[in-house]
Length: 158
Image (cartoon, rainbow, N blue to C red; front, top):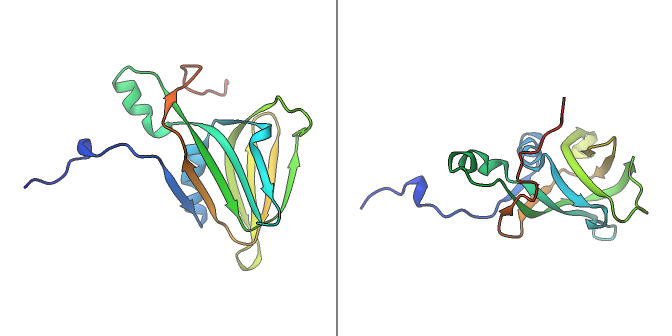
């Protein structure tokens, strides 16, 4: 019998949970440059849940794509935030139903007794602030990876 090798493992969808700022930094890095239509965000006030269906760039696959000279990939993912008490937005016009937003970072400002504000910073001066009772963020891939439509690595110019 031999030990399993990394190459023997099957690629599986990501399912990550962040309950502290260190975990949140990992999810934030994986979500950099994720895009989503404005219609794909939902705050379920009674359930105290905020959710986004987004198309994230597969940063974790970048080295393999470059080594194999194959296209970059994206995957559809759901970002869920639990225990949300309030949602505020700035720089977002919810009436413009055709707008596609680009997520840059996630950040957390702790409050008292585990509460705090989770901020989703968007390209173009947009942001969402979610007041949470406790930090609980879940990232879950829900489709198979697909070729990134642009075929390019996301960039932010100079």
